[in-house]
Length: 171
Image 1 (cartoon, one colour):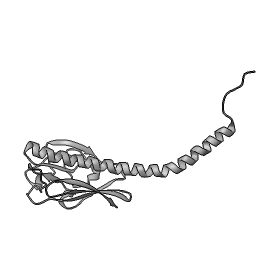
Image 2 (tube, rainbow, N blue to C red):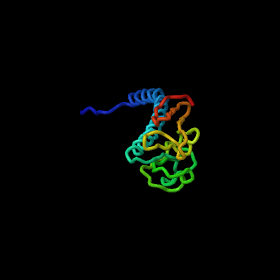
Image 3 (spheres, one colour):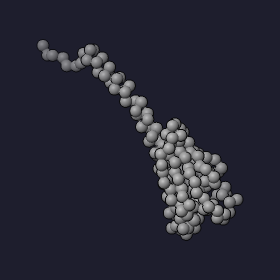
């Protein structure tokens, strides 16, 4: 008589118990890792936009800015959580909400990531042809953009020379 191959009910229950224990231990750590990755991705996307704006300003020899935009065409006075665009800078502050040549559109970060900028950087971050950040009217523009996801956060610090760097912070 041939012997039948398979697993017994006891073997199946032991395997399921071990798998449940491993999942119980691993899932909380995985949730923290997922939270961290969402924050890192949003920070990297915003940094990529800042680098693009700065390099395009230098390369084109004209002002370029990055600003919040939900529709991908116009700068809007909302937080960067709706998304942002990199576009050519207008001639005056009054024209920031008008449409202009858009160089790149970025979607907003995952829903749980919030982005807050201080000062005029909440409206736009403008780069001059020399790579420095200045308001469209010529005033000095420097500050921070904070990204938070739960209790973890990152801060992008933009110096007066236009260089951006990232540091970890608690939210």
